[in-house]
Every structure is written in C-alpha cells, then in structure tokens.
Amino acid sequence: MDPEKDLYREYGIAIGQNLFDEWVVSSSWGRIGGPKRVKETYFASKSEAVVLAEQEANRRLLRGYQVRAFE
Image (cartoon, rainbow, N blue to C red; front, top):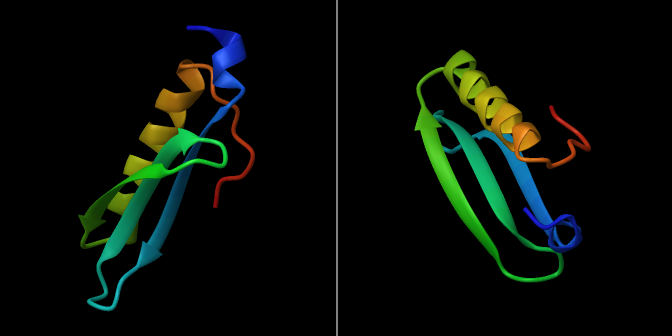
C-alpha cells in the first residue's frame, strides 16, 4: 500500500434510520474532493447495525485508515 496515495482517500461510515424504520449502515469511500462510492446495508435493529459499523471501522483501521469520528 502506497502511503502517499492514501493521503488522498477517505472512508466514511454512518448509521441512521430510514422512513420505514429500518436501520441503515452507509459506507462511502473515494478520493478527497472527488466522486464517492456508497454502499448501504439495512437492518431491523440498531444493535445489528452497530455491529456491522464497528466491523467495517476495524477493517479500515487494519488497512491503515485513520478514524476521525465514530458515532
């Protein structure tokens, strides 16, 4: 992995509810200032959504990303 190239990438994870009361984990990634790719995963409970979000965050930490905020 090229550390210089990684300076220009970002990754975001958000947890929220949609209009159907489903919990949504939204992951976005891409170059800073550029278009982003987005993946959304739906859950019936908040606890399931939090587990996935924590797994994704840990996975990104292992790949060298820095966590700036996690709610």
